[in-house]
Length: 82
Image (cartoon, rainbow, N blue to C red; front, side, top):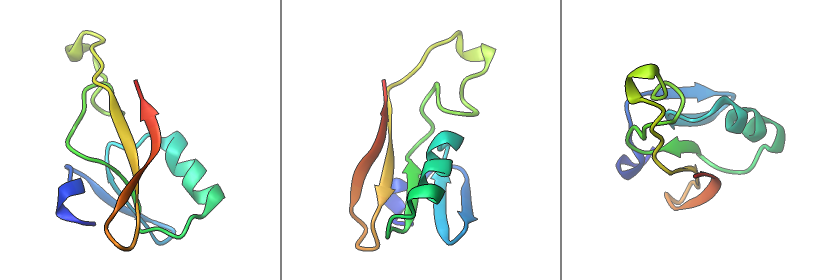
C-alpha cells in the first residue's frame, strides 16, 4: 500500500490489502465485485469511521472516502461517507 494512504491498521483479505478503518460493508462489496486492484484504504483515522465512532466522540463524524487503490498507486473514490 503506498504510504500516502497509510493509517493505523493493515489487513490482507483474499489477496486485497485493507488499510485503515474501512467499513465492513465496503470490504464485502469488494469481495463480491472483485475489481483488479491492490485494495481499499481509509487514510488517517477519521472520526465516525468504524472503530472511531465511540461515545467519547460525542456522535461527531468527519466526512471521509473509502479509496480503491490501483496497482499503479492511484486511487479512485469507492464510497464517500458524508
